[in-house]
Image (cartoon, rainbow, N blue to C red; front, side, top):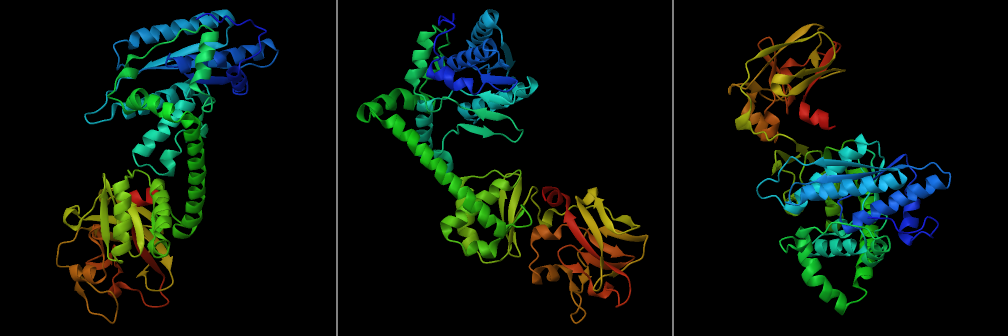
Length: 469
């Protein structure tokens, strides 16, 4: 645990790298207590101390430790980490320790590795913000990067997965994450630990072949490196090529989506999309799906959409996705967080809606909003303070699409206009006893005002769609 290097010794390549990181007011280090994170925390702390001793403004270094509760030794690890930080801080200051204990447990069927990783990053994010840190350092090194590339390749990943870990990224909350040792070998880190006689934890789970990374590390990697000594460096170069390919694909997707979804992230125009090559369609579709909030994307979903959107013409269709669904209608692909069908349309008592002025009127009972806006022709006669009645379909309503066409049962009008089931769930709008507006069909021709009369148009929007836009 003792820092045995003399104060005036030349910095190692590791501590020299970290000197450039230790500039913000608070620098956080993800600190498990293992060899790599111990070396990273020690080098960061020494860099901060060196800045202070040279007369510069030095940052405060905070060690962030996550107690997962998965190992019987977790309490011992927490004690070790807190004690080590206390000893270092007593020597030269500029270091504090912060920990949190995870209370959640993985659900049945969850990948323990994926669950622990997600919970760990969530906990690190919360602690970093609470400690006032704008930068979090992670101790991944070159072999970690090479292993990640191989594991992603074995899962059949594309450029995004093969890009492995990025050296620097900023999350949606503005927190920066940096892996300053991603191009350093494990041997360099081990040498640093020996040089400074650092005490660290040996996690017994690292020898458990249940986890894919452990199987690769214990059973495959030694033989791989013996057969190909330069494998580690070559695989890291491959991640760099994958990162470049991913950046190019992202730029291409941005160019395509400027045409395919220019005004809304919630609707993809299918006709120009179908004019692209299949690989380019896949790239643009995947990029668009990533923009849709609340949508879980799988490779199976992407392949199914590519096949069925390309071969299904323009007929209305839908694809369930978790708690929502993707919908093709009138040349657009959209996502709705809710699954609707004609059979499950809500049976809500009729309600009266006062319309004192133009504007949008939310109707929570129906989960939507009635828009009232001025039009020059083809609208409903406008009378300020008018009262409209919203009610569910009863089954015998008749609707007239145009003056030259007869009124027909609403069900047949929906069918002839190709209105899908999910487009038939809004309320019917009456003025007095007359049906004047139907979502998906528009204004009844018999309710249209004559020329020269002030008039308004009506439109119905689902609240979920309005919020998404």
